[in-house]
Image: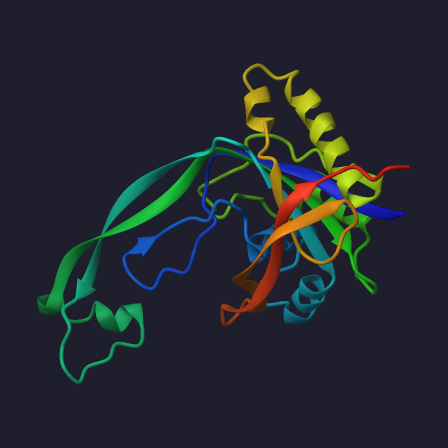
Length: 244
């Protein structure tokens, strides 16, 4: 019998950033592993320069995710000053870029966001995990640092309602979906947020989840200080109840 910590994420705006080598930054439909680990670290009060604690956190937890069925998104535009390209000159910092005013020009950058998104998150521990699911639940109820949805300007709009379930992953996921939807139905206008897509996404092997697609995403943190990430494999499929 396995234990899972289940909680919800909801806010008027969210941004699960994709790599942005140019002036456009898209958002993924799902929070990345690095975003969820960052949220847990903030709840536990782990700072970005505490590399040893972060490394432990990054090794011992797996996520199962569900997203609401009809998310919407918007695009925001920013103007930003950048220097013209000059042969044989390479700027290493933003300060260096802005030093010569004569070279500056204005360009437009684009940022995408999800609006009124809703995600149900399940966490499973692996052997040797430094924080129990009960400790993580307490941290999510009483976080040390503010929690947000990908960016500091995107606060949570609903409590996380963290709950610990026991059972097979498929049963737990379906039971949790029903329980959270029932609770949302008590809030005017919130029930539609909890209507989830039939598919879910997960890491590792879990009973009651049928894999249909396997993918890869570069969001496994290596170093928060150097902002480095490694690829990791995820599965996409559906949940089902095990026959007794």
